Amino acid sequence: MSSHDRKNHAGGSRALPAVLTVICALLIALSVVGTQSAGPVSTVTGILTTPLQRGMNRFGNWLSSFSTNLTDATALREENESLKEQVEALSAENSKLVLDKEELERLQELLELKEEYSDYDTVGARVVARDSGNWFNSFTIDKGTNDGIQVDCNVIAGSGLVGIVTKAGPNWAKVRAIIDDNSNVSAMVSTTSDTCIIAGNLELIDEGTLSLVKLTDENNRVHVGDKVVTSNISTKYLPGILIGYISELDNDANNLTKSGALTPVVDFRHLQEVLVIRTLKEYSADMEDTDDGTASQPASSSGQDSNVLTAPRENANASSGEDTAAEEAAADGSAAQSAEGAAADGSAAQSAEGAAADGSAAQSAEDTAAGDANTDEGQAADGAEVPQDGQGA
Image 1: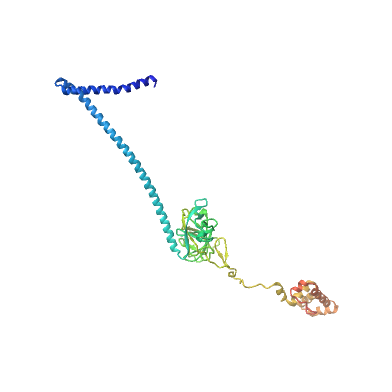
Image 2: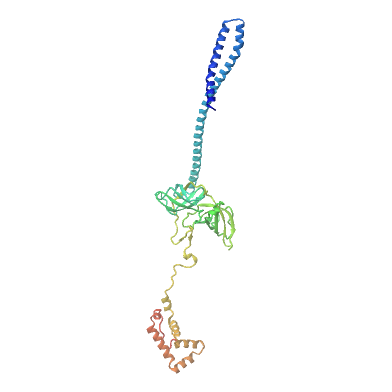
């Protein structure tokens, strides 16, 4: 728009009120004149002013309605903002109530678990950190040695076993779950007491299962769906803690053991609170503590009496007597071996006469035995006696 057009537009805007003012003044004058005069003038005035008055009334009503609507819109906008704030507050409160309800349910579940294992001294703890990944295979809790927690304390949650404490500080503890690749738990089937190993496997847990291996089921009494609990032969895990239920079972290639899969009873993807059992497993000192948490049997259980001592070598050699001396003399090429060989062939007497005739065999045996007795201290230490002349024969 040019400056000339803007000036014309501004002039027109200023002239419009003046024109309306003049028209209104004329209408007022006509109205006054029409009311004071009679006859044709009054009639003409009524004819001219009535439509204008009707239009002015309609405009006034519209303007009044517009003003009212504008006021109502402002009030509605303010009310709408207030309602939005209330909705946000109620939504936040509802979310908090939902979280509180979920936490209450979890805590009630822990309380039930605590009552189930009431024989053990337990303390509750919250999970505050975990290793990278989707699973709580290794995580940290907010309780430690100040609360009586120490290494090898069992950890439970949900409906059963979670894992074991591997490290502990004053106000923290590190837990390794049974789903971890480095975890092996000595377990047994609750209905038959047949033992097995539950091995952690992060690949299998993606399918919701753990590995079950080395199951001894000679009588085929174990079936899918049976409950598996911690075994009493474990050196670290307390007995009878629920681990899960058998979901698959197959014979191994050796036809002596079975392997399969187990569905754990704990949700290892959403752990938030746990119970730590401060009671440690007690086991015999002669049971070997292995990395997988199982106990090997003492050496005496294999059939060999561990109290039997092996006799020293020199005592065993001392009991051999003259036979050992004769063998040593024979090793040195003595005549005693010739005499023993001749006796074995049934010609001992002839060999003795031949030796006497020559006058050298007996003397050679005597010299050899005497030399061994005087010079070989190692052989004499074995407890052998040097035979006299003729005893070798």
